Length: 391
Image 1 (cartoon, rainbow, N blue to C red):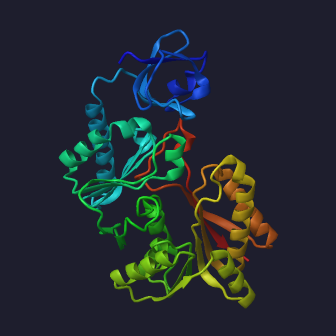
Image 2: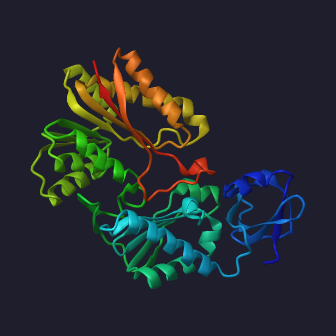
Image 3: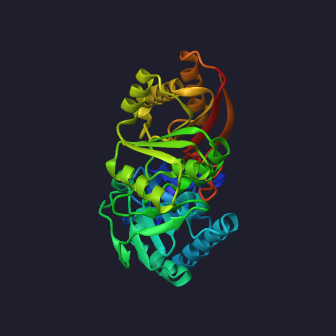
């Protein structure tokens, strides 16, 4: 490994504190012609070695830091970190065969997400370095996990930032459906049509929490996707669950998963824009005991944050207006650019503008298979909160 980059003075502080990204404007000099995805040594301003990482001249994240030592064998490093990540998941979820196996920077392989669906592994590759060495990952998943199918379901936004093609690939086996069990509920995963890698593992623990609140209650699951929260509510004895999503594909998926679990709770499946549907409920003065809203990210960037804040406030204000006194608002945001403090403030503002009194009874982030790095706020994105309506 002869290629290297030299950082500007004091730009090593974040890396030494545990962050894993070096930005292009933090680099003073380099050894010359370095290929995108190449492993390079990283030196501080005094030319002392900090470690090494993957370089990409086309990305704002110029180096994704891998290790404080010089890496002799990438395959050995990848294998040890993937197995270490797997040990954690099996300790946390011993009965499950499906979970987020590797969470990128949080599991110290930046730019790579691996979701395990039984023997099918779905990858998101957001780094030129990982793309360049993808064969090593495939070999590890075959040899250590007996992977039968390995596919990519990448996010175009992140691939574009890295200068990578956005097409998905079948790396091993075939593209086939999987039925997974999350510890209480089964889901059929359609990798062709589903969002993200096919399922939102990040909300899994939060779905179990809502079971405490729904017995014999009327429940609205808005932005239901494949039915995650609503199915757990039905399983836990809700009197009725209404599933709403603007995607007819997701509504059909939720209905299919409801039948797959042989649930007997009264259920209704509605293909509609959530804002429009909530407006209709308000006009009809129809209310629920539990209202769950889990929208997609409203803020994709800092620039879009002000509009997103207004969107979250409007959504939560409408949700509170269809909630019975003594009922529960279960609300989420997966917008990284919106902080937890800002999110809680938005809910408080929504309640105040409605003349409602609420108490927060629970707050959480992602499920345990999504660990976070204290030095990297970028690894923390999900906000999940539960409020009880007092009056």
